[in-house]
Image (tube, rainbow, N blue to C red):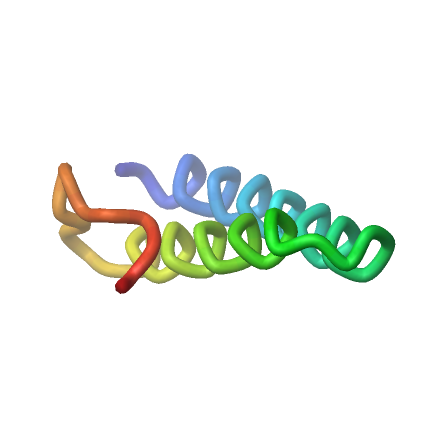
Length: 60
């Protein structure tokens, strides 16, 4: 993945994470929490040099 693509993806994931935080704060729903966890996991995977192709988004 090119650096520019990686940065764009990280930016989009950060927006998704912020939306999850807003959902959690506004509606006090677990779905917002799940969005935040999935975004964090995706950011973690994108940050790695070689992200596994079939890694689960949410750690159990």
